[in-house]
Length: 415
Image (cartoon, rainbow, N blue to C red; front, side, top):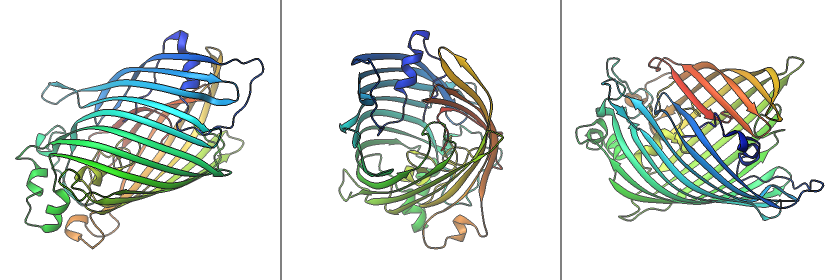
């Protein structure tokens, strides 16, 4: 879940434009004439959310040290506290999502070559969905979205360390280690509990869950970033592949599994119209014995559903070990304007998302169906670029699975 920065206190807006650059950020160092080292403190309110978890907000505080020759900063400490609220069909107000984290970003462990992020977080996901396994899972149309039969709760404090080392030109090595403690609250009469005791051995093994468990995994990957800009890309390409491994094999760490994720992106400017066409293709493969919540995700976010996957589909709608999907967007700048001493722009995006999921690597037509079985969504939404380092997007998407549409407010383009 990522929150969009809709508004900030007037006296910190300029500082925030510098503080929100992606991390870890391996930036080429540049020295500004007359610049001296100084500290920057940035408090800001947050607002964002989606039709899956509701709308909410919180607060961000960032403390950074700026030094000549070290871009975008020498180091930065960031803290956030966010929560969303959603009114159920019964009228009850709930808080489906809460997230708190502390991030230390060190982009110059080795100047311009090695960056390190250290992150502690606590997240509560109060309405995670489980509608069954496979690409052909079905939900009766008269079932309320908040039906506890299809929901469970996951609470997961986590510690992360992520290192990025530039190798040659735009080629980088990415390494990480992640520890998570998980607490699952599953209704004993719900679908997930029922499937974990299914007579079908495939369903039973994939839906099996441990109410309290830890995961520790190690991440290894490479990325090639040939984009002209990381925030508002207009041309270039980006490729990344990553292998995550969780050794598991004990009572405390019961899940032994691996993930292989690939990501390819292309961007083509359309002159003289000032528009851009972008395409992203993502694959995500799980091996071994993954936790049930991983079957619906890639990169800690839903693959089918959510703001960063196949939009319009309800979050966590489909579960399986193998996923492949694509996002195609056309982005058109409507006009540019200056405000608060910086250049800003308003754009519109039209998009089509589509993909498919498989329960496992052996054929399971009873779970995945036959034929193409593509899941898809279409939609549009505005984009607001503030300065050169922050982009806010709001997407509205429809799909055959939508009830009635998906709405997402978040920061950054989907790719």
